[in-house]
Length: 214
Image 1 (tube, rainbow, N blue to C red):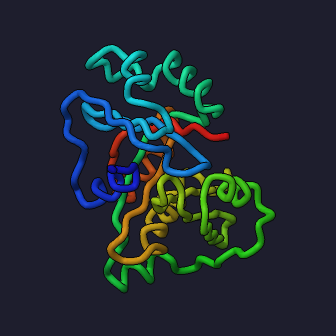
Image 2: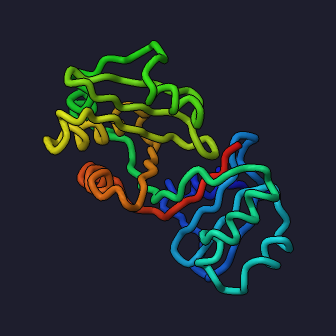
C-alpha cells in the first residue's frame, strides 16, 4: 500500500504524483496528524477515511474542493481533528560541499534546553527536534515532522529582520541535515517575507498542505 511517506520520498527524488486531476487517499501518517496535500493537478488525502467517503463529498475533477472549508470541516468532524493551517510547502536538498556546510553553520550554537516558545512549539509537531541559536538571537530548528520528513522552522528577532539573517538560517538548515537528504519548509501563503527568504536560500515550491491535528 502506498503511504504519504512513499509519496514525499518520491518527490524528494524528483518523482511527483501524476498530474491527472485525481485524488489519492492514503492512511494517516501517524496518530499525531492527518492532512490534505495538493500538488500540480493531484491531491493526496492522508487520513483514515475511505475513498468512497471522499468521492461522495468532492465532485469528480474538482481539485479546489479538498482545500476548501466545507470538505475540511467534514474531515475535521470525521477524524476528530482540527485544521492547524493551510501552508505552502517548499523543499531543498542538503548542502553537500564540506566548505559550504561549514560556512553555513558558522556561529550556530545548539540549544539543549526547551524553554523557548518556538522550541516548545516545534516539539508539539515534530520528533527529534534540534535547535541552534545565533549571536543575534535567531533560531533555526530541524525535526522529523509529517510522515517522518525533515522540516525546518526559523525565528528571526525583530531587530535582525530585513538584513539577510533569515536567508542565512534557511541555508544553515540545509547544512544541519545529512548529505543526500532533503528538508521541507511550511510557510503561510500570506507571509511574503518568509516565502522570499526560503526562495533566496534555494528552496523550491512543491505544493500546499492542510495539516489536521488533535
